[in-house]
Amino acid sequence: MELPLYQILIPGFCLLMIAKAFSHFLRHERTLRELLTLILIWGAIGLAALFPSATSVIAGFLGIKSNVNAILFTSIAFLAYLSFSLFISVENLEHVVTRLTRELALREKKEKEQK
Amino acid sequence: MTTHPSILVLVPVYNEAAHILAVAKALKEAGFRDMLFINDGSTDGTRALLEEHEIPALHHMINRGQGAAIQTGFDYAKTGKWDAVVTMDGDEQCDAGDISALAQPILDERADMVVGNRFRHQNHVPFRRRVYNFMGSVITWLLSGKFLLDTQSGMRAYSMKAVHTIEIEANGYEFCSDIIRQAGYAKLRIAEVPIRVYYTQASMRKGQSFATGLNTVTKLILRSIMR
Image (cartoon, rainbow over all chains, first blue to last red; front, side):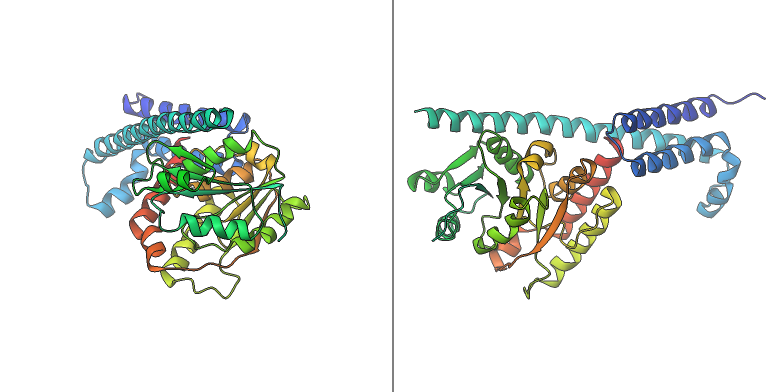
């Protein structure tokens, strides 16, 4: 059986995300509930990529009757991941600014108390 | 007047120049000498007022949000020897007289974190606030497995174990639920104690709106999924 490239890339990426979540769980950085939720989300995306015909019900419901649904699906998943990543990057920058602000405030207080 | 030397009261403030003196006075009258205002980059003269009246304070150079301000207070608390740390809003919504009851489960070592519950007293909590709070409780429960009646209350007490364990990463209002999530992970004991609350038009304008609520929910979910 010959698989199209997206049917290899997307499930592979989903497996990677599940492995990442599992690693977080093992390091006690995630609860079992979160792990199961993530397995459900990424598993569903991976399975939908592997068996696109299973999404025909949804595709029919949405009125998409061609193979365009696979392209749309892949694009949306990719864009969603990009926007999530962007969100995390902005959050990280926010944390850096906050840490700096905090450090300055604490240092100022310490200097005042030492005077 | 009794004094409570083992409790540090943290009051995060942002543009609350009209209220800080009254809050500081109420705390002193209630016997709480160890207080620390965290001025979160106010632009209304809050800093000058705190300095003029020699009220202990930390000053953020820029506004970072209530969650960030409380974590700054926690970092300061780690340098001292208090038995409990209490946080309360600086807009006169909270009653300093409730602090003792709030901190008691911590001092008795029955809890690591106590959340002030605004819905148990005969408080006139606006309907809108009740709805937002219920949504917050449901989302907090989904993310943390802990169901509390008032997850968005700013009046809380923490043991030093909790202060050392919790690391607030959320700057905005989502910190309220994030703390509960972290407490749940760390298996800290959480209790709720009824508190009084007084709403004014000014405090209603400052609290969570539908837009900030949506923003809070989005950030909480994204933070939980992508962390």
